[in-house]
Image (cartoon, rainbow, N blue to C red; front, side, top):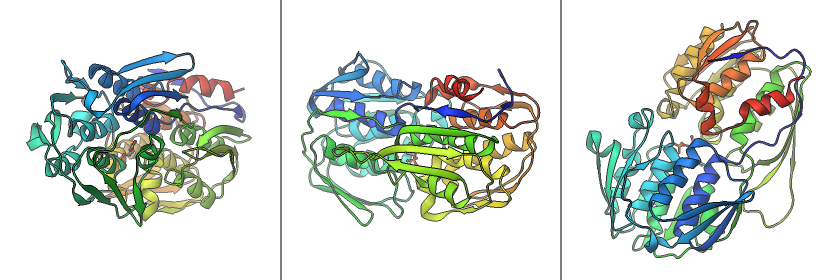
Length: 428
Ligand code: S3P
């Protein structure tokens, strides 16, 4: 348990947030199945990405830290070895689901397990399309829940309309599609993060994308490259929010990823009236856009969030809910039923934890309704083992009237080791 106290004055300074989690996972996975060496700069050494490293080492891939970068000696698709022990994805949905896409095409047996949270998260959204492509996957609840046993092999292409808006599902199918016979097509109704598509191109592969459809031809060889991981906008979001609600704050975030499939948070903050400026780096040759975000404290107004915006800010909803408690008027978040199957049921954990602190917030079937502004009290709060809930509550403590005693704060290491050091560096 950690005692957290309100900021005595405005937050000031510059924060270089750690590397993007989604891109770090993919950089290891693509490097592992590519031929030759990949050098990864600004890799996120968070617990989730360390799980991905561990899994690929068990399949014989050499991954070593080399100064500030990470060197991966790719084995090519055919060089991955059958793991002699279970692959442990820990808390990471991205590790579990994307790795399933790779394993589906490998002619060996493997077993994926994870922690108590992973054991509750639906995997049939991935195992079903992979089974349609020819993979044999079984697990609890008819192949829906970990532990999952996979026997991969020859795959054939599918033409698949995604029933959920999920970049993890899209990515797993594309990774399997790269190994399948024929052209695999994935259609999404709303655009989700496109890091996998960009990675395929970065590693010399071909992919066609247009109007919500991605197409890959099987049998592609990928080649090792250099990957420079941008700062994680989902991690920056917590301190951006902190600057918006602590009077007198002024914070700058250089090197943050500005991929348009991830910048929904910026649009929402602009709609709420936040004082936020974006300066995109114009240097050529970047496979992921990035730039500097500058934020100052200012009054916020409630807003409505739904539809195609949701996948572009899905991981930021906990901290948006906190912002809404301090905004003038009503904020309605809808079309976000996917929150129920994240590391925790994030509709329940956000609503219950913020209610404990005095917020006026109610859960709905597919989101939440928040009325502000309401001063937050202190008390005990719990991350429930969910990194983003932990960070949201730590930010809440900056404006709470009494101290917040945060339980299970260790979960924050999943995506932002050093979070409390960053926090300390901007408190004066
Ligand atoms: C991720 C996709 C999102 C996101 C998760 C990371 C990814 O999940 O919430 O934190 O790296 O592809 P879904 O694909 O389940 O929406």
